[in-house]
Structure formats: structure tokens, C-alpha cells
Image (cartoon, rainbow, N blue to C red):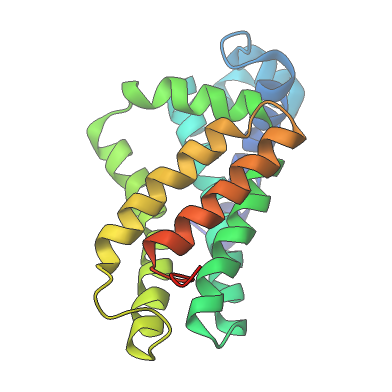
Length: 201
């Protein structure tokens, strides 16, 4: 495939994803058909199907596409913060703000459908998500080496628990701004506790 054809194919793929994103938010995942997406994107039904064999696959591709955008920004951001402990909180704060921009219907659709993913597709998605985990883990280990975090802190365990806390906070924050602020404040408190920071308070 020539470079021009690859570029055109990628542009078409991104156009489909953008249309799906808009329609999943507007109409909901279940109420959006391939015909709706094709019409919105100004493409033929067959073109949609040639890029994504099912709506579930399209939803996963959309989630991975959003992850890729986030990860690129997070990698760039990580390079700008020299203090590794500050970097951890900066990365989490950035991800929190980004996730807030994703429309609730799109998030709901993804979590409702993730149980039906094929194993290879699910593994690919998890691999992408683990890139962020590695960014946080590496920064936290560096902070520990430099003495910003106590040596007795179990970094892999802390990162694992923080991941659970983060997704619980996202769930708790979905109702309104007040709930979101409360959830983020609790997440910050949990982070400090798990890293054994501010233990003198």
C-alpha cells in the first residue's frame, strides 16, 4: 500500500471514529446504527464495515484512539516535570481532567460492552492502559530512590490499588460537579495515604 493510500485510509478511519463518538454521545450506543454512522461521516455503509467488522470493534477502536491521544500527551508531560513525585500527581491530574471531557454516554457504552470483547482485543486494550500505569510506576520508583517516598512503600501494590481508587472516583464523580470535586479530593487523600506521605498529620 502506498503512503498516500495509507494516509487516506487513516483519515477515513479517524472520520468514522469521530462520527461514532458524536453519535454515541447524542443517541447512545444501542440506538446508533452503522447506517447512522455512515450518514454522519458521509461514507458508504460498506466503507464503515471494511474498517470495523462490528460496532463493538468500533467502540474498542474508539477507546484505544482516545487512549493513544492521552498517552502521547502524558509522555510529553512527563518529560517536563523533573521532580518524580510531583510528576506522579501531575500525570494523574491530567488524566482526570481529560477523562472529564469524555461524554458520559461514551464511557457507559464502553464499560457496558467490554465484557463482550474477544480476548486478543481485550489484551490489546489492557496493554495500552498499562502504558500509563508504567509511567506512574517508574516515576514513583524514582521518587522512592530519591527519598521522596518511604522505602517500605510497595510500589507495584500502591499503583494497583490507586488504579482501583481512580476508577471508583470516576464512577462516584459522574453525577455533578460537587460529586466530582468530592471524588477527586478523596482520591488525592487516598494517594497520599498509600504513598505514606503526610504521615505526621
